[in-house]
Image (cartoon, rainbow, N blue to C red; front, side, top):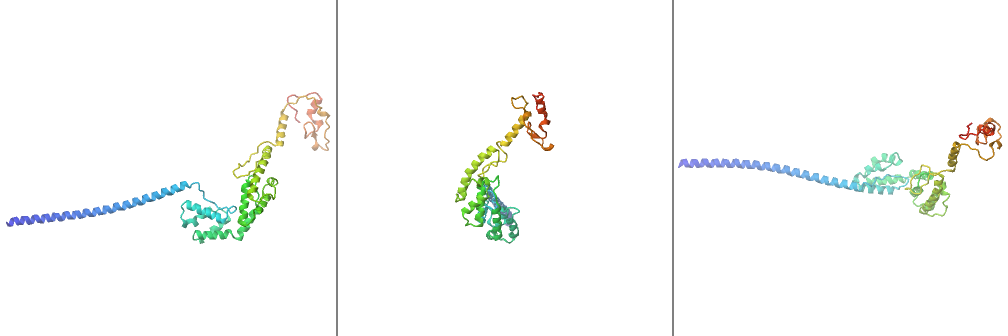
Length: 328
């Protein structure tokens, strides 16, 4: 009986030990599974972040491709007001998804190189803190008296160039006037345009008959069309009414001078034949006071006199050459 009890106690002990070993193994395996689960969760979070970043990058690229034709504006002090430039810069930044906190840092790329305003920005940008501060500083600089004097100098020294379109030139002058004084009347602008445009155009535009710049441009188109008809026949470069008109640098047509000069060269190469005309010897020679003023009436050029002309001597002796005129 005692042997049976001992055997049962030993079996119970073995089972307990086996249970404890298996429980310990299960706990270890459970810990390993928890570690693996945490690792998988971390990897999942990394993949989600990468997918989100890729989606945002794709959306940005798509937006940039859709707005690829939206060029970066450049400030032109002769044709843009400060408000106009600020408005275009803000539209560009918004379209390109540039963060507002960096607008004042990249606006310098929109200022023309080696200009007064770019030099001003090089000195001032260290003190500008945000976009609103830049707008205040920029407006203050552009409205200063020195800037107004510079604009006046540009206005009254500006003249239309031959290849410059009349319409662009007129609107540029109009913009300059409005930048100096927004209350300037259009009649003053029209008078200045007539006084500084090409004289060939100004002569045909009736002064005092235009009240606005738009009316002046409409009449100038017809005037330039009529002028170009004559210029085309004369072989002179054509004038431009609009910015889209081609720039003509090569002369077309012919001039009266070039026509006769080219035909005179052809006549010199033609053979000389007997014509029932008055002999050249009967023409009165041009009187010359010295050898430097000798003139041949047959060849119609200086260099030798009629008495020294071999062509006339040949005709007198009846020795005409039917292939080529003798040269002196």
